Image 1: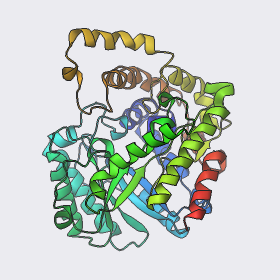
Image 2: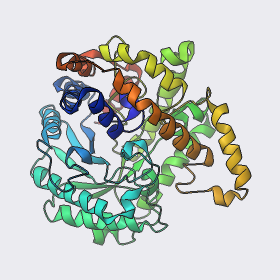
Image 3: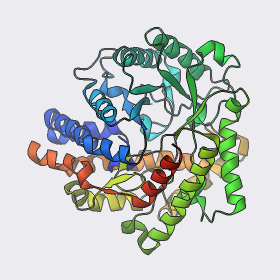
Image 4: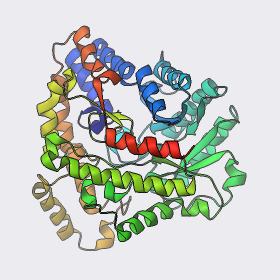
Length: 446
């Protein structure tokens, strides 16, 4: 889970712990299990297939498979939901790619690594890497003969701070060898460093080192698909900037004739409850960004997996209806979270920028040399973005976690399941403009 997808603040482990404190372990576990059950059902797979799409990337959290307090011991029923979703997708002719989205210790400084800090400790402790390799062995053992699993995305958006990617390359060496000792058939997908954008320090001998059955994964988010990207007019200059960013990400692979896959991409969208009368105009421009990116990918015959399928209304192909119990219950909380720009992803911090700008100014005054302010991962994390991530998305969010959990206070299992059912396909709304673009592209790509 990610905070902007389901509405909670902070990281997944924080809200799981908070809900257990409010409801008790048993009922909290019941809710989250039902949430996963209802989040993706046969109706979702059928709808996805109806768009002529044939591959979906499944993000997994290592915590489903091992406990941090009992590492490298498989949890009971660890594969229950993953097995279920892979089978549902196969039934509808959809391939799946298993993506380790959350690795032990955190492979980057994002909330989606579910470790609660801005430092990628995954690369600093062998214990964490051992656990990730162990998990990929378990996954390979389970799915090595499944023809509907397209492959294994070994690590989502790594941010190894070493200049030569020594931690990342070392992990890839170990994980690939471990997987290939079990499964020589499935594709291995390797994200570039710095959030799947940088391959410059990858070894020159990757064909010999890692084999031919490997795809190198970029994440091609266009700045024009986000609130801070300005107004997209589709001008020649804007399109050229979009092309430059895309080609820069795949340049290293193209120079060596390697396979490129786009594992994440896509704009975010305005919502009437927040952007009001500007919503439709903003979204028409975002759909234009979407279409122009797809035109680029079609030209190169680039395969892709859009981010993302379902959420509460910001980016998903479908989103939870405002009339569901979950959205009604949390409406005031979600409005305040939006106003405070607590979620990092695509945040519009207009309403609170004046609060955090003094921190930025103070650091600039205290650290006058610009080169000293360029901390990795630069340039994606500018000084301003670093302050936003730590002061807003980590600190402020932490103080809101218990409040989110308190909304569920006193609920019994029947009511908790009704909350979880809010995420069922039949309780969701299709984002028609987005899906029309995807359907047209998929049909023309046959």
